[in-house]
Image (cartoon, rainbow, N blue to C red):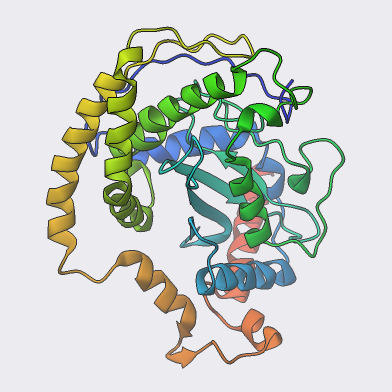
Length: 341
């Protein structure tokens, strides 16, 4: 059982794929398959209510207007009930500088019910990054009614949800496992942190940046900038731990983890630096993509939204025309009904 009743079986197979190795088509296929694991097909049969779409727009607007540190979002351009989120691992934690990619799906009656959330950064379903983060991507948190006593209420928002997920990436995740508030063996917390730090560099940094095309374009810009910001830290962690290479990771929860490979990670980081410097140089002349999203949110139809009331804001067409969305879904549903006849 984990802080959130996960199974923490992992292995440590390294990915040696180069940048841009995975196509958008492959990514879409993987995303659709994994969403089925969370059973969103039931929501696909319902037409989102206008109030739900308006609330989602307001939550997105507020997140982009005043984003919590280290949290970035990008809504699907043709369906704002699906939201991509990137959380950068907080400072002074074993997750520091890692890129943790999530997909959120809002229900048709949001915010009466909570979104469903999936962690995509799992090393191809092999790495549990936390007792609350399953290797299959499931997140165990009370705020989304997936752990202990459900605590979601309509007053919650996308921002409060993402901040709650970010808080899971803590300084001592070992103690988040139920029954492990105290170390069972001296040094267990330190050993667990060493494992998570290694896997963060291997999967949430190297593997992520070696496959940039697997992520929304807006996140690529953010990740490249953050990579250079944390690069010296990454290298320092590798050089300080190379003596551990080929030693088995001793998971305090008894799960197999594989071996440490800091030398390999060091080499991959250097290669990434060379490749990303070229990409960064070519983008110097361009306006930041992520900033463009914020500009769109803050100005719809050339009007300044910052002075609007909540009622005016949620009714404004920030991303999507609600009537068009509902009409589109009604037409698709009618077509499905015709097919069934």
